[in-house]
Amino acid sequence: MTTTLPKLALGPILYYWSKQQVEDFYRDVADTDIDIVYLGEAVCSKRRIMRNKDWFRIGEQLQARGKTVILSTLTLLEAASELSMLKRLCAESPFLIEANDIAAVQILKELGKPFVSGPSVNIYNSRTLKKLSESGLIRWTLPVELSATELAEFQRHRPDNVETEVFAWGRLPLAYSARCFTARAANLQKDDCQFRCLDYPDGLLLSTREDEAFLCINGIQTQSARTVNLLGEINRFSDLGVDVLRISPQSSNTIDIIKRFAAVLNEPQSPTRFDTELESWMPTAECNGYWNGEAGMERY
Amino acid sequence: MELICPAGNLPSLKAAVDNGADVVYIGFQDDTNARHFAGLNFNDKRAAEGVAYAHRRGARVFVAINTYPQVGAFERWQQAVDRAARLGVDALILADIGLLDYAAQRWPDLRLHLSVQASATNPASLRFYHENFAIQRAVLPRVLSVKQVEQVIKESPVEIEVFGFGSLCVMVEGRCLLSSYATGQSPNTFGACSPASAVRWKETPRGLESRLNGVLIDRYEEGENAGYPTLCKGRFQVQDKTGYAIEEPTSLNTLSLIPDLMRIGVCALKVEGRQRSPAYVKLVTRVLRAAIDAAKKDPDGFSVDAEWMASLQQVSEGTQTTLGAYARPWQ
Image: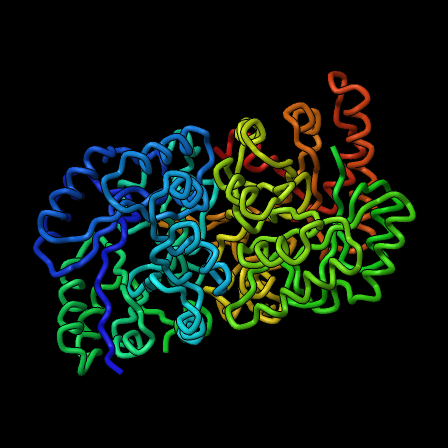
């Protein structure tokens, strides 16, 4: 049996960066070997430094460099205005859309457009995957709390023409809320948040009272403090028929991380050869418990 | 507006029915429901007794099968749907797309409700579940303001039920993995948050400590009330501050909003707490029944009775309550 190695995707920027930082970041990304780039705002509708036209422009530039571009959409929709924004984005996007809520699934189905699903779309069994493929799903992302064993079971029954993506690098997106915890940390109300997220390009660390780095506050989203790195599993990914590995952007070293992933995909013989270096680029420490069927924060 | 009350066992179900619940919702004794706790919930025999008890008294019974069927174990959830259907319950409360698909095909006449665990917060999502599975009602996550609930109701193809009282998830239900990050078990995968098996209490020179799989969730000084170490309600450090960085131990209490919720067209008010005692169920059912009846009789003259408030305060987490996302401070 021949196995093919997965492609590399860069997930959407989950933090709030300045426009300059975003522009500079994607200029550098264009020079890498990344295959797929997700653009857009998936966390908070108040983050509007980048407008749709800015994302479309960056997307065209990346596409001109041979990248496949996908536009990400909001995970939590509360106000009617957010739903209208989502509808407009789905209708106007020249690129494929990543649905992060069932609202996007429905809207894209109504538009007759195919879509991919992000890690917050709850696909926990094969019947759900099949049903969504009937609505136009062409690639899904494994929920981050599921394991290699569970993925193997999915892959056995995967519908034809549906690709599988795995969140392979980054702080794990764990929860979403009506409340903004970054604003709360600054004693501000959400509707007067003063865009404090701009001060924390990798989120705001939440530690236990014995100084154990535990979670990472990113506006209305809560992430793990630890970073997942599944590059060492590359041979297992090909055995399992995983099509795409997702790298979630961080404010520094993302380009280096992409390069190490690409190097291992070119020569997968000793996939852990960059591990020490990769670990030095994590904001706190590594975790890979979920992939191994344990608590997400654990490390194996 | 109907009153929907929780029951983790037969005495609680009877307490709910006897004190004015229109509907009681229950779960089976396994990980097919989001209150998968030891010693809680119904086997088929108890469930049948409960259904008969409720129906004889004009109340209805819903069954929550609202965790996500795990890949390779779908049959257990499928069987739960079949068992509930054969018990003659009045509706199933489901979250998973695959399971909704099964239930809609296998039991086309059975009423399906969308669980809060499906995280559906907007009319487009509701349309998906309505078109695909003919759901007739959805329970909204506790993330919307009253105005946002009203907007959803205006465009929703289905009836809308909301939470009225009980322990509060500050995260969108169905999209919170904090518990499995710390313990390996989450509401989605296991039907429990911050599971008791992972909890450890220890007296230390610095105070009483609660841990979840080793992670320090809180530490209590002499005289402080210690609460269950639900992960999001612990005290943590952010920058140089120590405190409830995510949420305080508090319960949702919508007594003062009942006339508004009726006016905007909420069809049912739900009480959280299948894990709580029959005494809790009795007290909360009684208070909310009185409040809903008062609001129906005279919506404009409605005021919250001080005794109702005091009763609910007693059974609230940290003995404090909040309007949660319904009110502006959260938005």
